[in-house]
Image (cartoon, rainbow, N blue to C red; front, top):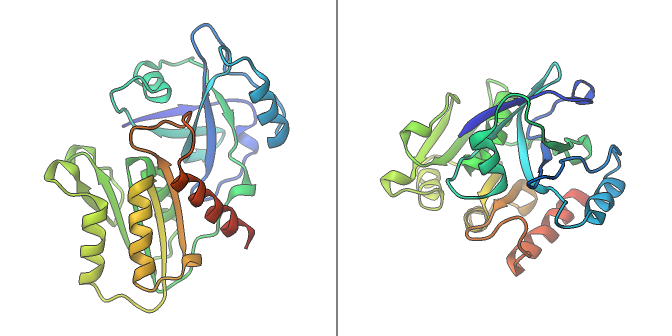
Length: 249
């Protein structure tokens, strides 16, 4: 992973909350990252879609690691392929310009309240989990799991149990095993993020334990062998409908 800091117009005016989400836009060769100055999502997105595809910047979703005094910090996963975000971050230098839409408080979700909070995700979810853990009261009981490639990818995030793919482990096998070994109270709230299939499997596990669906916050951040530009799968659409329903409650 690589950590980038950004400055730009409007950042000083944005408040902070855990798990802030935003869109970053990466210019295509010879193109620009600028889409629209409008803060209105409908205007902005219509302007984005109206751009010729050859000029339309690549758009990817990210979570803010921190935002303070007009400085935005974002962590990028370098995954060794030609994905636009990873490729840009691998060679970025001071002065390079990308586009931004958000974060918007309209998409802020309240942190759950329960006797036990459970957080689980991979590298892509680490910024969100880190920001959520930072606001927990000292008395809050929690379990936090983050899957990374190996011990060299661990970060200084107190309370996290690290899951290493190099050891043959993954979230879907480790989280149920650890949870089954602890005393689980009747009141549980769960936060899940990362690879979509893993998130769905873990959600099914916690629902099977009796955790109400309304007490499980979940998001499939990425899909194996598919990019954000590819069409949604049936599972993606079902997940989107459930998330829309959750935001409407």
